[in-house]
Amino acid sequence: MEKLIDLHTHTNFSDGQYSPNELIKKAIANNVSVLAITDHDTIAGLEYIDRSDFENQIKIINGIELSIKVDKGAMHILGLGIDYKNELLNQVTKELKKKSIRATFAIIDRIKKDYNIIFNEQDLETLLKANRNIGRPDVAKLCIKYGYAKSVSEAFKKYLIDAYNKTRSVGKGLRYDEAIDLILKSGGIPVLAHPKTLELDKKDFLICLRKLISCGLKGIEVYHSTFLPEDIEYYTNIAREYNLLMSGGSDYHGPDIKPDISLGTGKNNNLRIKKLSILDKL
Image (cartoon, rainbow, N blue to C red; front, top):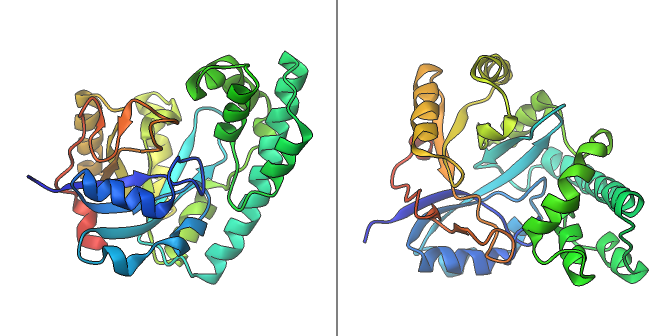
């Protein structure tokens, strides 16, 4: 059986379901031979990997997915192959953790005002003390616990997308030039994640992409669980035209968070990545 590559996954140190070691075991079971752990705005989970246990079974790429401040849509930049012990990176991610708390509690306040959704003080205290970054999936789980929604996706659709858009100014994130510079200084490769979420037409997307490249962007995700075959073809051509490294991954969070996305194989088996140009640089 051919080995698979998955360079975009999340653990419970951001908004994923499984611990780093559980995720790696699942990746091995799913025939993934190269795995990048790319938690949102944190590197905390990378310290907890039992690397010697997996040495001969899988190649683990240290990564991060940085949230970028934008006026519409969502921009995320992956840092692949980072040195997670880098002093600057650790300093910035500590600040990002504080920002994640402010942004999450702004959303909790918003849904309280708009929908009269109220959570127990003890649950909120638990969020404040969490040894990881918190975000909308945590609020979604509380919505389920209190009967306001039946699933994470329902909570997002009913409350959290709207609340996020209303609290964007408080939102976590870096400027794209700051994020790219941070990744480069941490020894990593900056990659534009799931470019469709920018919600830009082709002309504006290319204007944006050129700005990112001028700041040092090195790669782009040409494979993602949400991409249709025509998307993959389009972003592959973009990567070739702009001499960008090609990357890709499932964006796996776990069945409780994103039930339709499988580790290594994506959505309805639409990935199965066996070769990527970026691996030559990692």
